[in-house]
Image 1 (cartoon, one colour):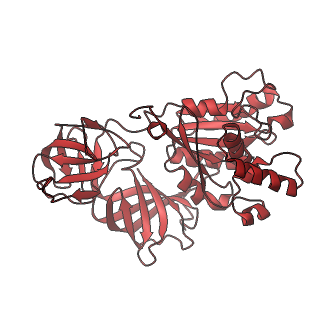
Image 2 (tube, one colour):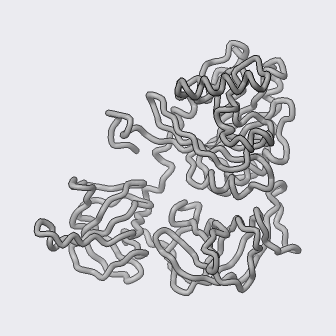
Image 3 (cartoon, rainbow, N blue to C red):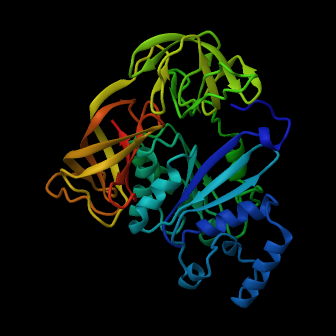
Length: 423
């Protein structure tokens, strides 16, 4: 949802992530999106032209637009998550460019955690490979609502429709096993520009629209949960000025549902009921608020509410428990410790927890559950049981990506060691 389309600031924002194996052409694809959508400054383009000549290329090497660090270029790999921003007249975009190597699973999880869509890149010569399955599984694990499968390098297989159809059929077989609601297929040549921003003259058999037209038209208004009202309190506002002497507001971001002026709400964990007195956005009074708006709620009754509490509507209760089951992606060199104590961050709440049990690890290539090896190290994905020191107010990740996600932090180093999806 967006308030209006009067200007750049009001345009709808689509976040998408890109994933593919090494040399599948991710950097070239992103460079092509930026170049053909005229989202590159002249000085950037000149620098890329000079770098292309230095490398002996007889064409503009668009991959150089996104392979930012010189050390990465020299190694020929992209080693971290890079965020790129651009816009068209229809939408704003944030791209999370994540590496394809198996040892950087954590980077893909980081880049994909807030994405509306994922672009899965497949080399037309190689078809669906293990890393394709791994990236797709992680995308479905993170409940990314929309998947766009780009079969790249079609110029190297003579733009043959049967190659595209074979790969599409192979991927669709795997997609039927995992939980994918919306998947689209596009045959492209990132190097030549076919079907990226401009329609290909080499593939007249394909009629489903370019990658850019798909990204501009993917319906994202239903990607949030507008049914179950959730408002984690981030900050209590008490101006104590002459103008707002008695004002007490609760600031935060709406994580789910729709809150309207006058609605009956329940404050958790106390369970006290009250009504919304006003919904404020800076100096403006709003009639309603919905995800992902950041607003301040004032309530009719003077209730003791603090950061980490949650305001909900009583017709849809979240789970309140100290026992949590979550699928964890481990992001630290030090392995997860059974019995280990960690800080747990969930919405605006920061509490302590202990790891009770590792139920199983997941083989991200085969989706098989591993029960005979429960050592959870860097980039491992595992289902675990946690016990928190205080009750947590949560939903399953499938129900709400905000209230169903958590972060584990090492008490000693304050490093993020794991991210988890509840349920």
